[in-house]
Structure formats: C-alpha cells, structure tokens
Image (cartoon, rainbow, N blue to C red):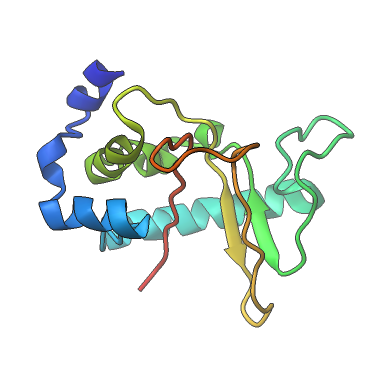
Length: 152
C-alpha cells in the first residue's frame, strides 16, 4: 500500500504540523477546497443521474437483490458503491491530501472499505451520528477513518 500512496503523491509533508496536531487532538481536519468548480459540477451531475436511475433502490449496495443493507433514512439521500459508479468519484479516495490525512490516522497500511454518498435534505432536521466499527477500540488504535465533503 505504501507504494500506491507514494505513487499518488500522498506524502507525509502534505500536512502541516498544525494540521496533524488537529487530527490528533480534535479527531478531524478541514482540508479546505480540494475540488475544482468543474469537478463539483461533474460530480453533482453524476449524482443526480444516479439518484434518478436507482430510484427507490438508491443507497442499496445490492441493487439486484431483494435485500437492502442500508435502510432508507428519512431526510437524507444516499448512494452506495460509488467506487463502481464512475471515475468521477475516484478523487475522493485518491486525492493526495485526503490520503495523507487518512494515513496519518491509520498508518500506511489501509484499504478502502466503501465510498458512499449521503446528503441531508434541506429542512429535514438533524441527522443521527453513527460509528463504522463494530466494537470499542483503545485510544489511538483507530480502525476506520471517515471523510465528508461539503460545499462552502
């Protein structure tokens, strides 16, 4: 994995000491604007197309199955398995600064577990928090690292 991180330019020096400190102390880091306006436009267009195409099954990881792994959430749109739904989404798990932040938390041996889209609908109220690991871990022994993108 270290070879691929290097190949993608995910070097340790892409984060400042202050940014690393924020990750360590606060558990999150705002990377700022990492997508161009054109990337955002293309991503929005692809999401809209997928939401319309998948319809009621949008958010299911098993579109061809009667079993839906993730129940519909009131007040949120969801798409699953974006890794396999177009190269436009690759930037979310290949951007060097994103990878540098994730590797700071998890180390350089990691794997992508999933890439999903979840967006709260305007006016739908607060959304529930959840964890993506099945058991408690010791402080500093992190197993997963999540990422959220937002528009400013």
